[in-house]
Every structure is written in structure tokens, then in C-alpha cells.
Image (cartoon, rainbow, N blue to C red; front, top):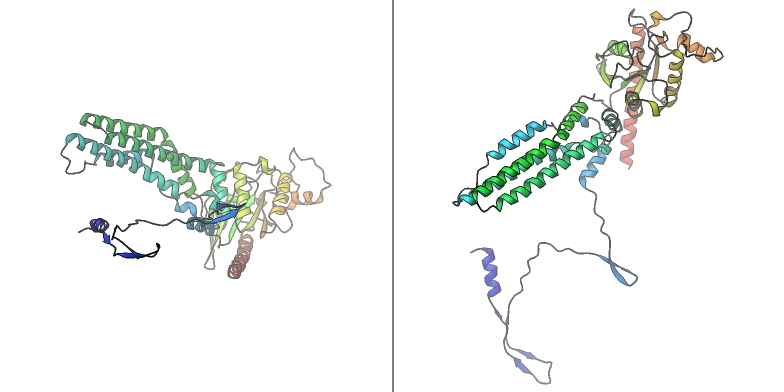
Length: 444
């Protein structure tokens, strides 16, 4: 006997109450026995509310919901890097649609339905439901597993904005999620219509109409999935930086020889050509010394202009310097071959030195084999010799700069030695910062 029938019988069974004597009236009298039925209360949970008195009236107190664990987790991992390597694999929209159609057409009606019309409408509703789910599930996976930009490390957040364009990342994710909602809405609507069909012919027609409607919608807006696929490929190709490993960042004007020095100092193999902005992104190499691995980054060149006028490549360089614990190897070209005059390079150098002077710093004058005795002057230079620092810079570069030539291998041994010393110092600085951070966490 089931539990429900037992409860029903219990509810039907009367309970006889014995004769009682009432003391309300003056004299005792008997009350005939009465039948009473037990009251059954089925309650899944009890919701309670708290109230407070405001101006003589009861007003419900506001309920403060605890923050979700997912949000707490995201906040805890705010400073982590490497989110781009954890992105889900995105399938092309054509493959998603083809796979969904193929799986949906394999769905058969529920067994045991003898009526032809009922069997056909059952099959149609099940196929439309399957098609909707096969399309919606991957789209939901993409929306949920692509990280929220505001929880990313500032460096990776800058990479998204500068590489993809400000707002484009969120816009594409929003359109993919909107497509998922459309597919779900259309699939449910036509599955419901198919389930209400009265004849086999009507059920078949509504199934065909529903599949066509879903397919048209996905074909029309599936380009957003392909845009997300391109975004995933672009972000995955970004170099992964280890925040706990010392990083050497080569900075300077375009075409001053940064890429050549990266090839000499590390395992990186950047493109080397004689035109500005050869480096179109952050290129990564590694230095292995004394069983330790150091990172080397080649950054796009900086031009003489204010931040508002800089292109995204230049802003990418500034993002690396702003958000990553790097040691700076600043490269100068005083030969005039790079296309940026020594005077303009001096202005850029002073600006960067002032903004990022707290970084460990090493100056290098490249192409020293091509240096002339007299300083190079461009037509844009005013020829004023009153600025002694600028005049000295045109001849020798900054004080303490190492003069090197990749072509003649001049100064390369000294450069490598100084770079290794600077990276060792950077390692010590990182370890001290990590130790201080752990102490603060223990105190808090």
C-alpha cells in the first residue's frame, strides 16, 4: 500500500471523542460524542519574514542575501594570469548546426504509442526539443566559461581592450547569449505547436516549419559564434607571463633594434625588418641562466606624442610596463636609421623614465658601429645647442648606457652580464614582495 493511500485512509477515519462534562453552564450536562477528522498539512518549507515598526506600522525588514560563492571565487582569483589558456574550445557555427540537426533527426517517438497522429506529434516535439538543446548547450557553455573582463588581471584586461577593441569582447558574448535565448524560445514554441497537432500531416508540417525557423535564425546570427571563435584564437595566442618569474622588457622607439637584441639575449625569434611597428604585439622569449628561467618581452615602439594620440600598439607597451613586474632594457638608436630623430627619442625616453623610474633599468645604445663623430640632426630639429643634456644624448646616449652592435658583436658580452645581474635583482625584489604579501594575508 502506498504512502499516499495510507494518508488518505487516515484522513477518512473519524476519531471519536468521549463524553465530556461542560462546566460553562450552571450545571453539568453531557455533550454527545462528535466526529473529528485530523487536519493534514503538507508543507515543503516555511517562509518567515521579519518586520519592524515604522510610524506605527509593520514594515518588512530588507533581507540581505549573502554574496554568491562564484563571485567570491572570482574576486579571490582577480590577480591570477593565464585565463586565456583556459578558454573553452569554440566550434564553428556551421559545425554546431550540422551536428545538432543530425542528432535531432535520430530521435524516435516514445515507444508504445499506437495512434499514428499521436506518435507523429510526439516525434516532432521530441526532435524540436532535441534540436533546441543541442544548439543551446554549447552557446550557454561559451557564455558561462568565457571570463568576465572585470575579474581578469589588469594586464590581460588591457590585452583584451587593446587587441579586440574596447567593448567588442562583451558585445560578442552578449550576442552569442542572445542567440541562445532566441533558439530556446523558437524551439519551445514550435515544439509546443507540434505537440498540439491533431493529425499526422499537421504534425509533420509543424516539425518541418520549426526546424526551418530554427535553422534560419542560427544561420542568420551564427556569425557571432564565429566572431567568438576568432576572439578565442586571438587570446589563446597571447604570451603567458609568469608573475613570479623576472621579466625583461625591451622598450624604445620603433625600429631601434629591440627585436635583434631579443634574438641575441633569449630564445625568442621575433620578426626583424627595417620599418616601424615591426612588432605588432607582445613577443615572448626566455633566458636560461644558472638553472633559472627568465622572461624577455619585445614590445611595440613608442612615438613622440601624448597618450591620447597613441595607437593600440603603443598602449600595449605601456600596459606591460604598468601592470607587470618588469625590468626595463631601454634601447636607443642615435644613427638616424630608425626614422625617429635622437631629439625625439630623448623626449620619449625622459617621459618613460619619469613614469616608470621605479623599475630596474638598463640603457643600451644600439648600432654603435654606425655612429658618427658628429651627432645626427633631423630637419625637424631646431639646432639649439643650449640644452647640454640633449647635446650629450645625441652623441653618447644616456649616462651609463652600454654601446652594442649586433652586426660586429660589440658589447654583447657586457650586455648579457648586466642583464643577468639585473634579472637576479628583479628575482630578489619579487621574492620580497611575495613575502610581504603573505605576511599581510596572515595578519588580516
